[in-house]
Image 1: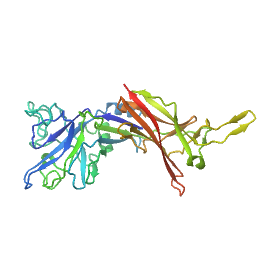
Image 2 (image 1 turned 60 degrees about the vertical axis):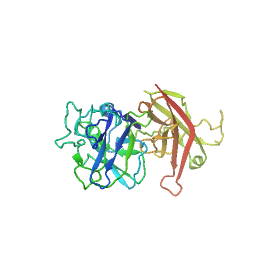
Image 3 (image 1 turned 180 degrees about the horizontal axis):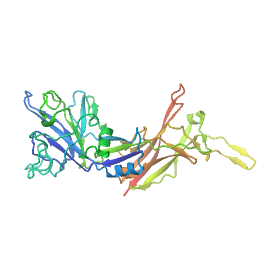
Image 4 (image 1 turned 120 degrees about the vertical axis):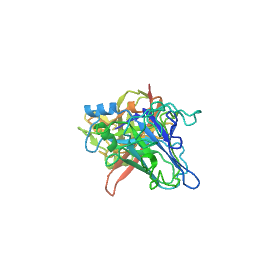
Length: 373
């Protein structure tokens, strides 16, 4: 299962204009401005916060099961034309250690707006609460084991999907307060060290990601992933290896629209393309309506945005198809998907897993639905 929370606030902190707030900018930037001789360096860092109330309550109630392996948490940021990323590098995520105000400034505001978090202050130019005793600190964060996440980038722009499981559990366990993530290159408070990426004279390019104020579908989101699959076939028979080689896969009872607050069970059926007739003393069956089950633990679903083709729910440990005595199915929480959009379901079926006869098949039969308000 995958569930998504969208950012409640975000902003970029710019060292070059340490009192400028950009809380209403559509783009978050992790950048570094370097002058021609490398003697002046200005960095920028992004702050993003998510409300964890529903996730916390769902874990406490058992709605989201908790184990040693699940749930996992991923921070998703979508590339907004990053540029000049000329070497392999990393971005890091940390839990912010102090509260901050998003503000209503923009980087192109004239005059400059200072109402909200900036490189220097965490509230505004009236209250002037410094991030730390280091003047112009650029924010403060917790660090050490369990307080750092990272993602590598190789020479070219890409979306960010950072594993932030350890940090999120620190918040859910009340080890530290949830003040959101800081996304940055390696660097120190105040950007004082010249030995790390933020402070040295090397130009690493500009990471640009869509923020919560974007007018696109690419808002920052926190992704929760867990394995909700169960397997109890009852008296059903399995599809044989021969059946699987030439199989038809379809969805039963798929509706054209679902309310955005729905939690829905989707039924998926696999059958041999040309089933044999069976005869008995009471008549015969064509086999077209006989339910058989797909391979256990190796049948997956994937959800795509039908318009952009972006993968919302990928094949993986959080999208394993289940089975009960009626047939195969999967559950989907639609309250984590954006409303008024169409989505398409695709399938991946692996049979003979780990053997010389292993096959991997993909099915895209244009099974689509719309999430409505």
